[in-house]
Every structure is written in structure tokens, then in C-alpha cells.
Image 1 (cartoon, rainbow, N blue to C red):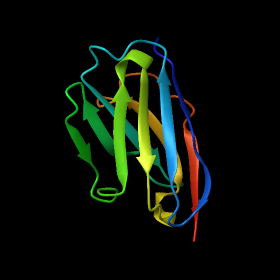
Image 2: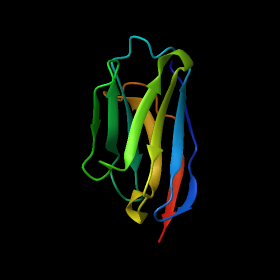
Image 3: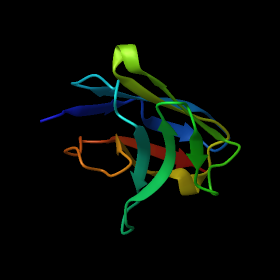
Length: 114
């Protein structure tokens, strides 16, 4: 059972930045695609960004140009650099594979004030 621990969230003003980290209990080598998701209150969880083992990256249109996903397989970590944050980015952020087939972690709360 892979465990995922997200961290780095917090309260930030609009226009600010945060860097999220996700630590996995197993190696990310061989995991084709990792992803960040978020879930705002009353909303469904949505995929925000994904990165393959060859560093092919995709972003949701809503975060394109502001967020940067990266991974460090040797450290078993996934990152999300979030710049120019907006109030609509407020959500709990999670990491998982692109198939979301690992047990979800607790997530990390990101709150952006206007």
C-alpha cells in the first residue's frame, strides 16, 4: 500500500506563491505518470497537472502558465510550484498517479485570499 503525504499548503494573498511537495512511500521509478489534483468545497476533484517519467507535462487550462509540476524519482517526491495564485485556486491539493490508483493522502490545504 503506497502512502502519499502532501505538504506545503497554506494561506496566501492573491498573486502570491506556494510550493507543494508530495512524498511517496515507494520509488517513483517505473511510475509512468504522476499528477496533482485539487478539490474545492462542493466540487469534484479535478486533475491540475501531470508529468510522465520522460517529463512530458500537461496542465489544466486554468493553471497553465502559473503552475509548474516536477518530480524527483530518486527522492520519491512530486512538486507543484504555484505562482500568481488566485482565489479560485483555493482547494485541498492531492497527488496520485494519473489513474489515481493509489490510496489518497490527506492532501494539503491551499487558501488564497483576495
